[in-house]
Amino acid sequence: MLRYRVSAFSSLPPAQRRYLYYLSQAALTGRDILWDQNCRYNLRIRRLLERIYTDYEGDRTCHDFQQFTVYLKRVWFSNGIHHHYGCEKFLPGFSEEFLRQAIEQTGQPIDEELLRVIFDPTVLPKRVNQAQGDDLLQTSACNYYAPEVTQEMAESFYSRQKTDDPRPPMYGLNSRLEVVGGRLEERVWRSGGMYGETIDRIIHWLRLAEAEAENEAQREVISTLVDFYRTGDLKTFDRYTIQWLQCTEGDIDFVNGFTEVYGDPLGLKASWEGYVNIKDKEATRRTETLSRNAQWFEDNSPIDQRFKKRECHGVTAKVVEAAMLGGDLYPSSAIGINLPNSNWVRQQYGSKSVTIGNLTHAYSEAAKGSGMREEFVIDKPTLDLLNQYDDLCDDLHTDLHECLGHGSGQLLKGVDPDCLKAYGNTIEETRADLFALYYIADPKLVELGLLPDPEAYKSQYYSYMLNGLLTQLVRIDEGKQIEEAHMRNRALIARWCLSRAEGAMRLVTLRGKTYLKIDDYPRLRQLVAELLAEVQRIKSEGDYGAARRLVETYGVSIDPTLHKEVLERYRRLDLAPYKGFINPVIKPVFSADGKLVDATIEYGEPYDHQMLRYGREYSSRDSH
Image (cartoon, rainbow, N blue to C red; front, side, top):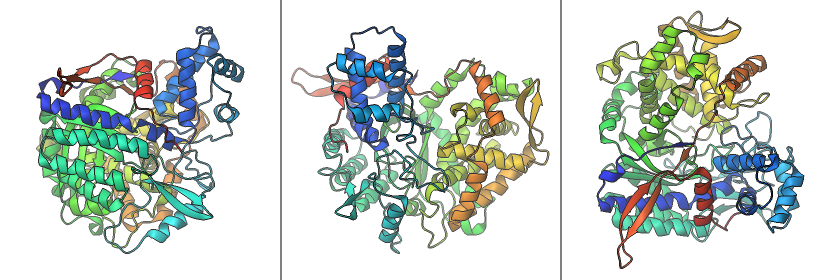
C-alpha cells in the first residue's frame, strides 16, 4: 500500500478547497455500488468480515486469525472476493470451523449460503470470465446480469435496441439486465431506481459542489450529471459527456459515475468510479504539446488512409495530481485516463486525457531498489538505459496512449462500436499501446523537446516487451491463463512481435535463466507499425473473427515452464505483485455558525482504519 501526496492542495484558496472537499465526498459515496456490481454477495461478506475484525475477542495471534486478516485485506483491496486484476476468487487460508466460531463469538447468525460462496472453489470462481466457448455471463460472478440471463439472451436483447441513429447512446451502460415475468427488463441505476439511495447521496454532494465551482461551465457539467443521475437517461449522459469534455477551464476536475466497461464480460455495462484531481500546470506542458500536434500524429500514422481522421477535434490533455480516489479507481488506480468512451462523441467532439502524475511518481519511487530490474534485465548496458530513461518514457508512453492513442483512427460507416464483443476492450487497449510505442520512437518527439535524444525510446521498447513476455506473469497464479484486458493486450503485442522478430528480438537463456534480448530496435518499430495497421483495420472494419484469432493466439495462454521459472525468480525478491493507494483525509473546516469555510488535508491514516471508516461512513443498504 502506497500513499500519494497532493502537493497543490495547500496553494489553493479556500473556495477551491471547499469545492474539492464536496467533490471528494461524492467520489467516495458510491463505493458500495462498485462492491455490489462486482458480485452480489460482496457487501454481505464484507460486513460479516469487518464485524469479526473489530469485535473478535478470541486469540488474535493464532494462525487462523492472521490468515483471516490477510483475506479481509485482500477483499478490501479488490472491492470484493475476486482478484481485482486476475478476476479469480480468493480462497481463505483459515478454516471454515474458525469462521463459524468467530461468527458465533461476535453475535452474528450463521449464513450457510455465504460460507459456501467463501469456501467452495467451484462457486463463482471468476468475476469476469473471458474463456472462448463458455457462456460468459453464466460463468462470471459479476452482478451486471441476473443469474438466469445467458450470453445469448443479453446479446440478442441489446442488438434489437440498435438502430441507424448516427449518435447512438451506449446501450446498457447503466443498468442490470433481469428476467421479469418471463421478459428481459433493465433495472436502471438512478435516483428512485436501482442504487437509488446511494445515488441520492451522491447528488447531495454534487449539488453542494456545484455552488462552489470555479466557473459557470463546471456548474453546467455538474447540473447535467445530476440530471442524468435522476433520470438514468443515456441521451442526457451523452450531453453531460460533451459538456464535461468541453469544460477545460479551471484547476479542478473530476469523474463521477458509470464509466468503464472492463468488469462486464460483454463490455457493455459500466462500473461506478469517482475521482478528483488538480491540474499540474508545469507537467501539463508536455501533454499540451502532444495535443497541439494531434493532427500531425494522425496524418503520419502507419494505418490505412481510410481509417484516419481527416480532422482531429477537441483533443485536450493534461497532467494532474489525484486528490481523491473512489469506486473502481480505489485502492488500485489507473495512472492515465482517456474519456469519453462513446465512439460518436469522440469522433465529433474529441477526447479529454489525463496522466495522474503523483500516482506515477509514487509507483516509481516504490520500485527503486526492489531488485526487479536487476533480476530480469539482461545486462548492465540495458539496465543503465532503463535507469536513465525509463521513468520519462513511461510517462510519455502513458501520455501518447491516453492523449492520442485512444482518440486516433475511426470506424468505417455502419460499423457497430460493440461488434468485437468480448474482445473489444483488449483490441482497443492494444491499439492505444501500439500507437504510443510507434510514436515514442519517432524523431518528432525529440524535435518537440519531449525526449532528450533519439536513443531514449529504446528503454520503453525493452521494458514494455519484457513486461509483456515475462514480468507481468508474476501477477498470475501458476496454471492460470491471462484474463484481464490490459494484460492480454501487452502479451499480445510482445508475443506477436517475438513471433515475427527475425533477429530483432529473442528470448535467450543465460546462467539458467530466461532473458529478453533486443538486437534491432528499428526493426522492432517496423513490427509495431505492422501490428498497429492490422489492429486498426480490425477495429475500423469490425472484424470479429480476426480480433478473436489475434487475442486467443497471442494474448491468453502461458507457457507453463516459463511461467514457473518467472514465479520462482520473483518469489526470491519477496515483493508484492500489486500496489494500491491509501487516500489522504480531506477534512471540512466549519465556522462557529456551522458553515463550511475551508478544508484541510491529512496523511497517515492506516489501511485498515480507512477501510473500516469507509464502511461506516459510506455504507449503503440498497444492494441487489
